[in-house]
Length: 397
Image (cartoon, rainbow, N blue to C red):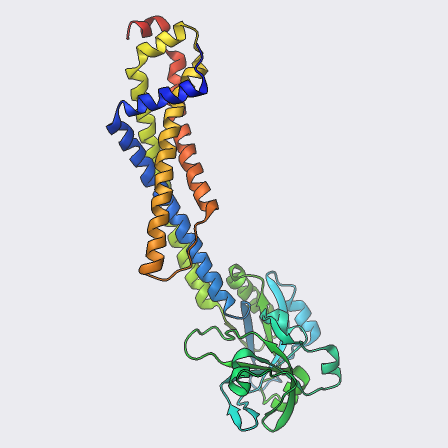
């Protein structure tokens, strides 16, 4: 005789509560496995969030090649050379840059040299990833007409103009006057997160080359990468490409995210270990589920025989034992997710500061793992029901 869903649920609860110790220990096994998995997912989410925040505080991941040649002319990064380098996988954008070494910016009686001043090409905003907050970026006419215009960031604007808008104001750089046409966000240019933030001062590249006079440094480029994951592979590929383009030069590549890349690799390796531990804990919990299912089948052999004798199918009987395992898994998994959430919330608020929010996707994945382990571990033992002889079962054998 088939059981209705309600009867199946009541029977499942009755059988589980009939042996609190065994059911509790089985649920505890699932709890520990799911807690390990969910905690690892939380750690991974927090680590990724922290890494994204640190990346957002910097310019796009980039490489700056330094090409030296003793008794050789300065390296020429022509458009044709840049086009060849851009064929390398993982590159987002390449810009010409001219560092203005020793630049000082003066506005009325205020002078500052705590800044990064560079002459830049038209695509430099895309290369850095910085957003315009007010005004505009350089236009083609600024380059063609040799206009003395400049863009400053929020740090430099605060140093020079306090809370007033910098747009339209004239500043002097080493005696040359520039009109500010844009305001950009402040980001870390070279990668260091120590010390006071430095201001940023951009001018069109032709004017930058004129002011600096190249100073014997030759042309420089800044290579933006598509993502942090591309850093090592793209760096090696660019170095190989530069060695082919400049065979007699010494080549050195500086990157603004090398520290973050190495840190991210260490974090990912640790997370993989934690995931392995979590999976192992889930497997151990699954073994507990399998054991309780086998024990339940052996203890209720006569009941199984009686139900089969009065018309219950093997599938209906198997469903009862699988439902018991699934319920234990869901109870253990729910308790684990809730406990890990409370502990993580408390730890990130009182012990160490970290960006944490409840992640429904991670919770669903953890609960899915718990349910999958419970059903999977009970399935094979439940198949024994189909091999039980009704006559022997009624005898209790």
